[in-house]
Image (cartoon, rainbow, N blue to C red):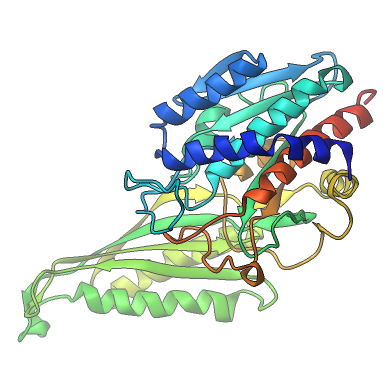
Length: 391
């Protein structure tokens, strides 16, 4: 067994304690007072100095400033989901770490301890970045706008994955996660009595045609070899069965991997929405609530990190090929501005009994993966800084 992995396993009880405390106290967005107080306390116990970056976002740095600098990112916020697991440490406050950010934070705390124990081996600096507000896609932007990437040469992030076997690590070169453009369409019609539709302009009818028309972008205007997903999750209009409403609002998300296809699809969406509304004498406006670029793993950096991961956890548990995932993450803002990559860490497969996926109120996560994540973070940082000390 790799030495760092063995050391991480020796920290397992502390990692579990950290994770369970965070899991019992899930908080949302930029409002993370309990979470940040706990993480800062733990870092202080290890001897780290804290630098506040944005509301409930901060860093702790270790190593030699004369060398390169790599940033490790852990997001800390939870979801407004009422937990329905039977875990003895389940949340009771109406929020839940259903996306596993409690495990991300615990693994980065474990990496912080390992790096402290190996501080003399560091041939550069490691910035431990603790980020709020990943779920609303605002935290990375706030951290970057407040200078978190200043002097950073590379970025490395992780995310839990329940479909993956516990303790395995998946790192692909190139596209890793899709973009996510969350949009709103406001359709303005003309209200009327339900018995007299000819006297009004039915915005619900317009919404139905827009929904169908937009799907043709995927099937008729983009190559079948290029994954694109367009989903409407909300269509709201009216309050009475016999009244044609004045307006209708649609909300949805567009996801893809290729930046050019993303730009093309957004352009065609607007054209189709406006022309379809005009066909039925209505008007429509489109606005974007969040726009997250795809997460792209720099191929050279990713392949180098794949080698360090193999050294740490072994060939069998290192996954370097496979399908991309249509989910998204605001880590892409970091990797757009700096060389970087994100990996997925397996938190339990269905064969192992982990049947509920991320964002599900019944989702549970394997704690045996905590030591693996901590070891991978620490080992990759140490080895990358060593390899690039003379660059």
